Image 1 (cartoon, one colour):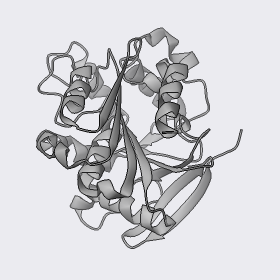
Image 2 (tube, rainbow, N blue to C red; image 1 turned 135 degrees about the vertical axis):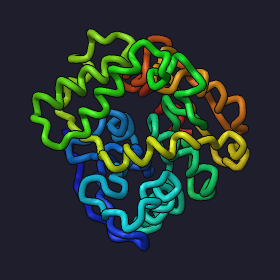
Image 3 (cartoon, rainbow, N blue to C red; image 1 turned 90 degrees about the horizontal axis):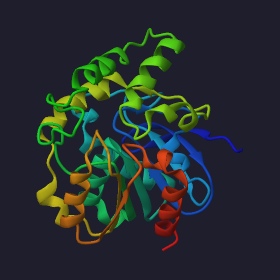
Length: 280
């Protein structure tokens, strides 16, 4: 199996760490507060058999430049940074694929730069703040697992955790977001490991409180493929239904035996659906 290739890209907005894999039409993947490395990413791996994937560490993650001002950790700055990366690589257009908070960045990308996008793939995400308006969301105070999830998120910010400690905490956190938690070991059997970028997570925690792009979705003028697990506890399926209703050029696929990770929980079906989009 081919490995992810590490690159440092100098753009008009700074230097960014990018990992590439695959051949074909370009697909850009990132997440708001994940820190990637050359072990790759389960979500990004979905696209490497058919496309050339660019897995991007956003500002302050990995070896990407540090921010000179706090606002550079914002989602709109992430979009501006992704545009500078696209331009540096010389692509007229590319597809952006985002899972969870990566999908939130993707919607902003579509609102402001549809002309740069062949399509958008939005998985398990939302066009507005999701925790306070749905008790089905694990980040809602009324959800039975709210307190433990908050505790786990804080613990995982600790850079001094041992590998074993980080594994156990990450496992428990992820199991909350699986339709079949007992399948964790088989689902996550690949040697893929990544960290949480604490500064980006902290900034997102504030930015998420005012995040709502529902009134701007009519500005998205590229095709949008929305996918979600029926039992998603992070971004409940109601938010995918809402996006599909508003977005003029959208499709919606709901995975009946998935929670927040349909690309892992129903990998074969998810890949079939994605490949249908990518060869359009």
